[in-house]
Image (cartoon, rainbow over the protein chains, first blue to last red):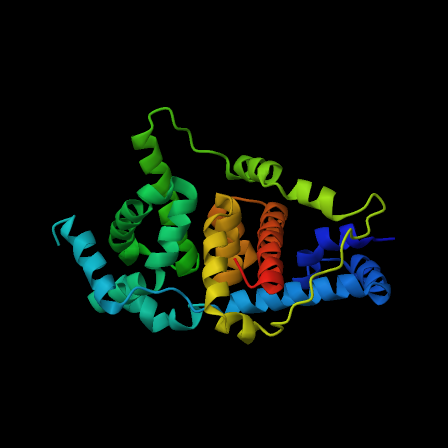
Length: 77
Length: 214
């Protein structure tokens, strides 16, 4: 039977859907009886959801044009 | 945020013709993330320079890009090669590390095993209750500027391969398979690196929720 340490070690595989059916069942059984692990997994999902929403860090159009000028100048274009 | 929707066939076709505005847009979209990726391999001091070299290789190679790999994978691969070439030039004794070995080394040295030992009892139960988060939606977490700065700070401090995997998977939402190809790692290694990066940041989030401080 899984314990809290096992759950914590495999939490991302569970959240990302990389566990087998048997492993998911073992997880589900532990979660049924452990509110702490339910909270831990809820917070892990919350954090991953937040990372997915962090806006992509882009250059400004001017900065990008400057990089391109420098790159192409280095080969004489 | 994924940039995939923008990388449609028309855009790629323009790039293959070395269309200048399209190339500028590509640089705009990818430069920062490629610099971060290069920093994970070659170190931050060389990253900007290496990525500029990589952009030149990309520019030259665009007409021959056949689309076998996703454009993002193709770019990351060029940067990885540029990093290794530069490190060989800078350090004559440098030999390209097997990323899998590097990943193993990171896993052994990231301090998380000690965290596990101190956080769980012998029987596997938690030593302490899970921290109760008062910010409990992704949006609420994103709105907290101080927290975002704190997370950025701690992402920068992750071990290089953990940082690369975390940024590719959780921030850029690159497929796991592509990450394995880019970094020459197994699925298993990528998943473990990702999980350990997440656990490290989870500790940061716990601390912030508890104290309001980074």
